[in-house]
Length: 369
Image (cartoon, rainbow, N blue to C red; front, side, top):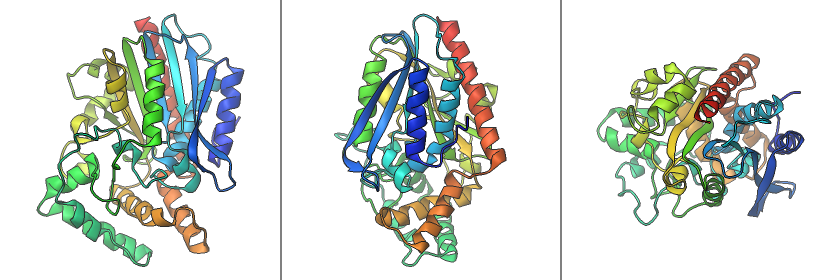
């Protein structure tokens, strides 16, 4: 079957059908207030394979950034359809979470229903990071009154130049670690836990009640060379879970361990503590006592400056996210191409990477068992 889907609804239907046919325990969480344009419910769907109270758990998510869902969702469907999850070793389980940000997928955005970057929302809101002096500078740099390709390039140039000048560290923190001051600037982490945050924490608590080991994988798109993978572990070299991460993700993860994004355009190590409020934080918080390995893997789509442009475009489109016009449809097409290109070679590469990563993960579960 074709594992790639043109829409959130089509992918969700395939996920439920294949998971049910392969003996998974299915559960869905329905958004309490938002629906699709046709009034259809928006859900986060969960398929669990293996034992309910397993000691060794693999949790795999996609779609925290909405429109980045396509390859991760396709990878999950292929894994289910392979039948490899039907006979897991004793003491092991695999939990597949389909689209943590259904609003973003349906309406074509990285952000959620409140304009929040969900992958910066997993923080302690009683102890938010200190205010960042660069947020206002970023907001000014990305301001676009009337969108055009030239305006988008100029805005990204201003932002990149801002990062090369003074306050580079603050710029890097605001863009990578997230900011909690202004929804008018990039990478806004919100002012309170979002529905996707609270729902995922519930999923983790249920899945890891007796877990000793949690292997985590969150699929994304954007960073890295076209059709290749860019791993961002949720721990540093030598920390607990690092050796397991290398076994599961392959030796090439070692070459990324100290790399800056595309040569350090904004400075700072993108690994480990440089990123703030990631989904993986929920596992650290909720699976108390379990060893965590893994993190997020990006499928590369475009050069770094084009990804910066895509982020600015996504920000500009947010206030028009439910509107429709020929102009907005044009920009949605551009945005989709940058986050999920419909290119046969890219799709083949991402599925190969996913297939190999899943295979090593299942081998690690068998080793633990």
